[in-house]
Structure formats: structure tokens, C-alpha cells
Length: 207
Length: 207
Image (cartoon, rainbow over all chains, first blue to last red; front, side, top):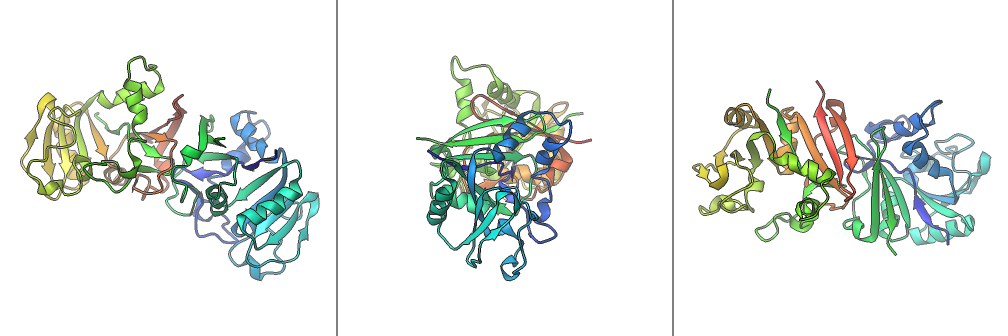
């Protein structure tokens, strides 16, 4: 049975998945690259093939579709720019059908490398139905941002989350844990600290 | 040189040091004992003498005074009850002079076991001066709650913090990290996960 998973969705010690304000110049607001540097570090030539690399690689394994929120696809206002094609250039790192939740749908956008963006004005359940159909035997990734992840978790649609906690404090931005009081009763939570200092949380839905 | 330290100040994954509302019946609000159960577990007969126990024991070692906020001393309104003597009975677990920050000072209260409560209407700096003088060659503990801890950290008065992160989500209560944006630049942060699932953070001020 294919799963619905979140992987490598990094947050700060205070639970923010991005800073503010987000813009074309600063996709993560005042957080800059703080939440993501560990991953780039793990890709460097000669980087240790350790816990960070292991978790990082899960991103590419076993997914047949992604769902993302409108804020992940572009800076505020991208909906008004017919030429905006996402942050990632012509060959985005998703390599699957990718469903962008937006109240302003537009025609699908076929990119290189297997990514096709579909723009859907849909509930989480409806979007997941589309993504599951596209993914076939493979899993669906809920790609973020924080609002999208916690909406899907609150609706009990997610089987597994990998949440790297980066030891920084942001104090503002988009909050992952909001509305998820008592998540520990629904998910088994396991953690490990990488030598980089990143704390990898693995949340698995209890059956 | 004696240090100013915070030990065993537990928070949730989303950074809350206590839930809400706090009352005589529910000192930690809706958090109940969730943030503290690991410590009681580590005290049980036959409990492993592992990481939780090791960190837990730091609480008692090397302190000559404590400073706490008014909310730690009693439930809302304790200032109006002349008979209130704290949560901890006649032999509180501090065993040192203990400075309670309050806008409603009262005479010192000598308890059993070495604890004397002093009620002071003072700035963090002034309170620390009193506590340092009382502690002599020993360290001063900033005992909580979250508001008091972050006030002292923001004023750059704290040398070391031990913050156990308990894998639960509270979504509301008193927040430890508020106002501490960029604390990672001022403190070295090291973490370890105990088999209980508690993530022990150790923050050491950079010199």
C-alpha cells in the first residue's frame, strides 16, 4: 500500500519551516539558508556518508507524485505572473507529477526530467486522490511548506514525517506544529542527532 | 568563576515550557506531567542510570542559589494569599537561598533543608547580583519558568542551558524561544537523544 510521506522538511528549534517575509530575493525570509545548509553540506565532495546523507537521500526514493502549497511554488504574487515557472529552473528536482494547491489554477506545465506541475484548487483529500492516482504503486510526498504539511497531518492523511530540527531559533515565520497538539498520541516519534548537530525526527503513524 | 546555569528546563517540540491555563490544580496547564515524566521515570527503582539520569542529576550539583519567576512559585493569585508557601511543601528541593521575582515582596521564608525564599522586586541584573553574593563560590541556577529563563538569556546573563526537548506538541503555553532569535550565534549547541526519546540540548555560551 503506497504511503503519504513528508521527508526532509526542516524546522528550527522553535518549529518554523521558513522565516519571513518571503520574497523573490529571499525565498525563506530571514531564515536564509539556515534550515537547509546541512543538506547542501551533505552533498559536497568528500562529505561523510552518514546520517544527514542517509536521511537526505530519502527525498528521492519511492515517490510517484508530490503535493505542494502555493507558497512553495513561488514568491507572493506568482499567481499574477503568467511566465513564472517555479523556483527550480527547467529541470525541477521532483521528477514526477507535482500538484500545486492554488486558488488560481492554470494549465499544466511540463518541465524537463519528468516533472509536470498541475495547478489544482482542491481540498487536501481531493488533491491526494489525484496524486495517488498519478503515483500508482509509489508513495506521495507532501512537499511543504509548513502550512501544507500541517494541514495534511491535521486531516490524518500522512503516514510518515521526517522532520530535521536544525539548532537555530527563528522566532517567526511559518510554523509546522500549530494545530498539531498531541501529535505524539497519533505518531510514534524517534530521533537521532547527526554529527552536524541536526536532530532528525522520524514520526510514524500508529496503526 | 561561578556560572549562571539553567538545568533540566524541559520544553515541548514547539518550545513551550508549560501549558495553559496554570492553576492550583494544574500547575502546568494542559501539559500535565508530559514535560516532566521522563525525570520521574529516571528516579524509579531499577531505572537505567543513563543519559536522562545523568542530566537529571545536574540539577543538584554545584548550585549556591536559585532565581525563579513569580509564576514558578505559585498559581495565579498566590501574591494575595499570605499563607502560600510554594508548591513544594516544607522541604523544597532547592536547598539554597532562592530568589523569587515578584512585584509584591514579602518577608523571607525560611524552609527546611536549607531553602530560604527571598521575594524581590528587582531587574534580572539586580536579582543576579543578590544571588551571586549568596552563592559565593557556587553557581546560580535560573530555575524558570520560560519567561524568566528567556529574559535572563536575552540579557546575556546565562552561561549554560540544559534544555530537554520532550517529543510532544503543546501549541500553547509559555514559550522559551520567544525573543531569542539567533541564539545559535551566541551559544554552542550540542544535542543527544536518550533512549526515552528525550532530546537533551546543551547550550554553552561562546567566549
